[in-house]
Length: 315
Image (cartoon, rainbow, N blue to C red):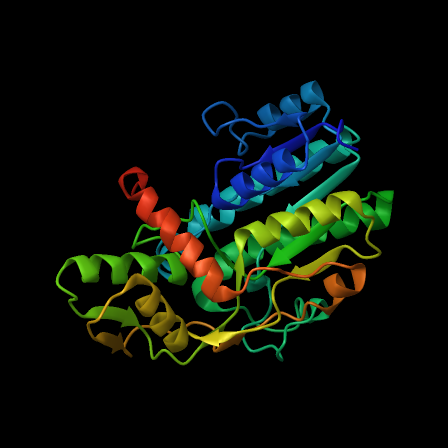
């Protein structure tokens, strides 16, 4: 197994880099990856030629345009188009070049905004999406269905993993385009440096969210590489959630900020609750390892050690 050729799409992002590190730690040396400047995954011909030339045994799709509520809402076109092109080109090229296994990574935002909790895989397409991230969600749903269609029609051993909210080393800490947890880490840290000034946060603090440390997702991808699953779609998470208010207070404590938290209820909350049912992955034999406080401490340590390297993200 360790001599298998594995292509990691998106190897420099938070998810892809965690997967790359996991595979290297497990002794895999035949890894293939390209930067976006070396290979434009939005270009169908270039993507197909790359897969045809490299002939990987396994393709892991961790490449995507990602961001939080603000980024999704303000840049709908690239969130829909770019993600459709990236995943469709990779999945199609893998199929036509007989790639043995594809692991497609999506997001819990594929599920309806007001679906019953916890979110089960069968809830897909049973109701309206959360409007603020519908563009990203629609793209990921298309990827899930492509994987399902290939398994149904051609018996491909391809699988979709839908992680809950991810965080960890190499996260995006840009305040305009980041997700809630890294944005809070940066806000509380900078407010502490600014004399423990107040920290303004969006919404009411009442929505509930589930968070998975990115190295646990990498472990789930590794598990999916080694095992053949019965189905095509699996949730990946902890099965535990926390209010945004509790999250803020936890990050405030870990960063050492002693000022006030100011909630701006005029800003959107997003989905009221988003908790994953992870029983299918558990039945396959996989479970998470990193508790939230431990993961936040590790992420904050990484942030402190790489503060000068963090770049602003432009759309």
